[in-house]
Length: 66
Image (cartoon, rainbow, N blue to C red; front, top):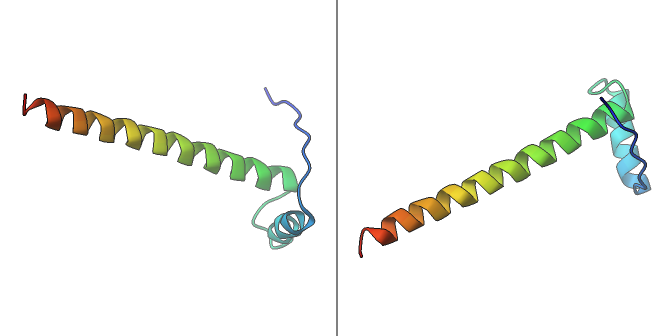
C-alpha cells in the first residue's frame, strides 16, 4: 500500500529531477523521488550492517586477548 507524502524541495533539485524524467530515466517525478528514497534507505541500512559487523569483529578480536 502506498501513502501520500508532501514535501518542499529546492527549485534546483526539482529541475534536476525533471531533467531525468525528460531524458527518460524515470517516468515521473514520483518514480524518481521514490528511487532516490529507496537508494538512501538501502545505503543507510548497509552502513548500519557494516558498523555492526565492524563492532562484532572488534569485539571478537579484543576478547581473544583476555
